[in-house]
Image (cartoon, rainbow, N blue to C red; front, side, top):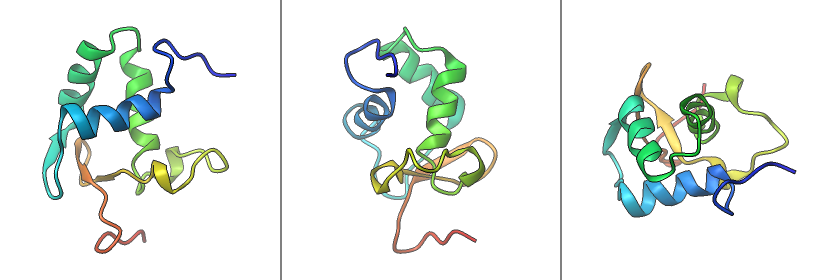
Length: 97
């Protein structure tokens, strides 16, 4: 069983953070370091490297870093635009090549 510092698994906390704290809307972008720093302020018990790994887990076009078998469609949250820039995943326009 995975350790949960806050009683909720980190991916669920990150989804909640994106929706409720960031209030990220369709088309809005964010920078990875800004996300990590902001999330760390709200949930300081997580290591920054662990936050980055989970951010990649929630990024649908980062297949090589996503562990298959542990994911479902609810983990398809983000789209990585470039090395450090993300936005919400839009299944109607984003195509995985």
